[in-house]
Image (cartoon, rainbow, N blue to C red; front, top):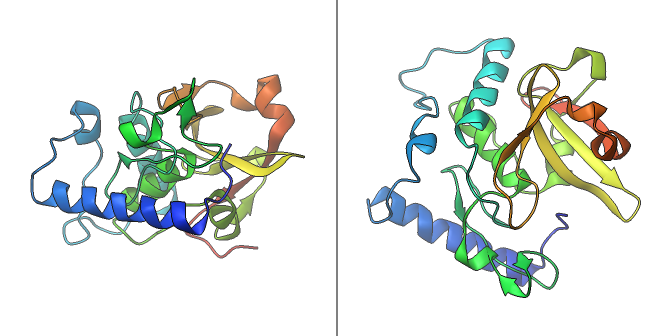
Length: 208
């Protein structure tokens, strides 16, 4: 579940992410490991423009490089995984605030990072599922391509989750506190996800 955080919690989370980004830039925080290093280079000065197909494939590759990174509610930004936080409902597991103890991604933090890095900084999505939906163009289910975003909704939680389609019907996503970034095969054939599917969108194109 990913409701929009309160102003106070959101501001605290942004501050933590900025501080972590400064520490990363100064070399004060160690790299997250081989998976994070495997993501394609995002330097706009050295990479040629990418076709839509190549860009989507690159998004999928960045997502695959983050498999196994922990879930952190509020975690993830343009730099990659970051420390999360907790609010009244989110970031907790068995009464323990894991958000503040975990460097990782939530669902929209992962999609934000993958698209920003793969596009060399030309596609920047908001760190909120509803904003990402509104900033992207609709895609029919039979036209899904790697890199497209899959959105999920319930009556009690509209647009509560987003994952990244990586081809062959598979999705990579950060699901909830206590889990790791994972791949789900044939996601739209899985009853739980099929029942909550709210549509697919493609960033980098005018929203319809």
